[in-house]
Structures are given as structure tokens and as C-alpha cells.
Image (cartoon, rainbow, N blue to C red; front, side, top):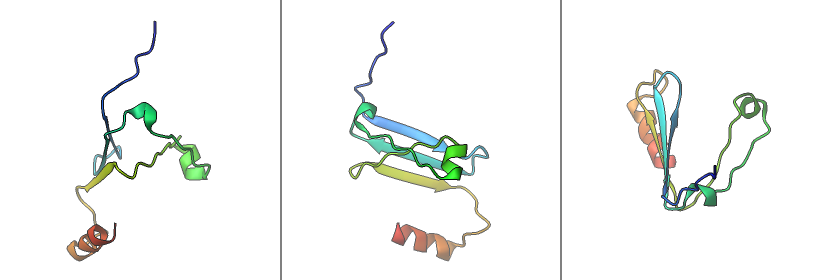
Length: 81
């Protein structure tokens, strides 16, 4: 049975198990065109993390509740990143 390779633009979703933080990534490139990288630090190795970079892509991070960020801090995060 042959594996089909998607020709659709990439739409990925991820987040924390608790559901408090969500990540949405989108790109006009198909997933096979995105380079996959592996970090060798202990955290990424433990969690089998993989990452990519796509200058034309979009990343949205949603934090539903945070005891560590005030409204002022969140505005600073939006401005800097």
C-alpha cells in the first residue's frame, strides 16, 4: 500500500496537555517541503521534539490563562515577538 503525500497547504495544531496553551502553524507549502530539525538538548530529546522554520508561514500562540503574565506583560510580548 503506497503512502500518499499531501498536496494541501500545511495546517498544524499543538499545545500543552492541560489545554491552557495552544499553537497553530500554517504555511502555503506542503508538509513535505518543510525542513524538519531535531534539537539535542535534554528537554527536546526527552519529549522527542521536532521543529521547522518557514519565514512565510504563520504561528499563532494562544494562552488561555496565565498567573505569570499581566495585561501589561502580554502587550509587551505581542510587541516584541
